[in-house]
Image 1 (cartoon, rainbow, N blue to C red):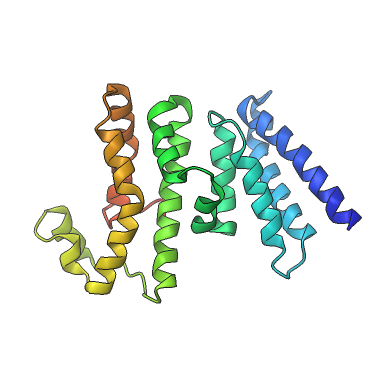
Image 2 (tube, rainbow, N blue to C red):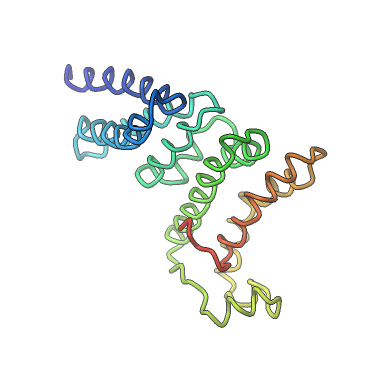
Length: 217
């Protein structure tokens, strides 16, 4: 309809302005207002497409526009973080032409000024995908007990020893999503890349494998 066409054009132009301002805000007040502006933009797109699941199409289009932004823009990653709970990790990963996880790990190693934002998004995507995989398998994702976490952190038992076969197989499938890319980065010839990934990605491993810091979830 003409309304949805208008909303589409409005959202596209607004997204351009938001991304540009996110990267180079003219002042602190504008910078602090940009996340709220983007949230309102997402809500507008959802409103434009009724509750017959076509709203997903609108959000997917927005995800595509955000992914098309230059990879060195901080706003690209903050925007994707906002869209993640709506579209889900699997759909977000499938929206990217190349391997999203690999590109994010590369981004942590390559882009110093956005590395923190990229690492935060990476952690949230992997945490979200882990929950989705458990839901798809009909398995309840339970947090290990305090005693189990202590034994794991002290090396008294491995994570797999605290899981049954189904959990262990599912956990391995999830680890396969990110472990090769983490390993590749940590074995890079570039010292700067190794340091960046070690400082920002390795802590995610502890977080995502039931370590002491579970902030990203």
